[in-house]
Image (cartoon, rainbow, N blue to C red):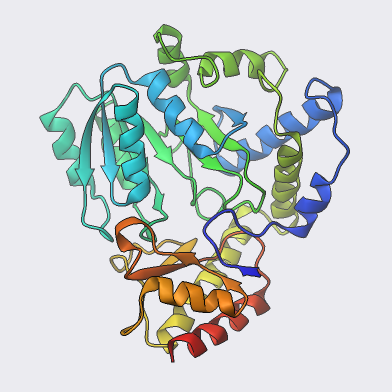
Length: 354
């Protein structure tokens, strides 16, 4: 089965080879070397001097950690799809008051929406933004959104689960306090690592927070990170070694902008290919995701019809998500996808929708 999913994605062969290593202790010098080398690679990649932690979780672990460590009462969540909605649900589940900015599906969040929400509720402590909304195949204009948050002095949490590694993220320049992702997306590594950068401002707030549990207490992580232990508990050692290999591969191909160009080339081929078959992307034009294409199903077929028929041709796409399940399907371009797979997939898709 050739994977064009939105996560977990097909893993790079070099990553899988690395992950076949014999196990080492998470307190050994061998692991410590891999851990801190990977952290430094990620700091360069994200252009940040902030601490980076490697949670033994998915990115949703960082989503919960941001609420537990930083929000005492009230937060603002930008919702333009299912994963923005998840952030809001995490806030509510942890007893916080959540103010929502909710757009129509396929529509981006605009800076003036955040401006109005913060003016109406100045006691909001933090703003949560989904950079790349996987469910609708839409990317928000993150630099413009974070600029408004900074002007109001608010903490900024960014869900970069399906954008980190596939497009630009400038953590320090854009003033992002917590920026998180997962290993099973753009980096082409199996699930198991929640990757997150954490600002000093966050750590200062976390010091004073109570009732934040232990596993996701950022001060516990910072103590071990700064003390040279890496993590407070057993790490997902194989995945971290695989992530190290993936980031080394990016350096060897010429750096992250070369890697972004690879994603753009794949993305363009897929978009042009579906248009030749009479289809188009779902979200507002100009805000289409660089890592996943959400496609309106052709007339006479539902999204699940397309998905099931493509499985019959040995291609695993992704079904539409949430409210869009029936009317869309999705094609991811993350992870290990040889160029010939794209042309083969588009040919099969043409046969399915003909």
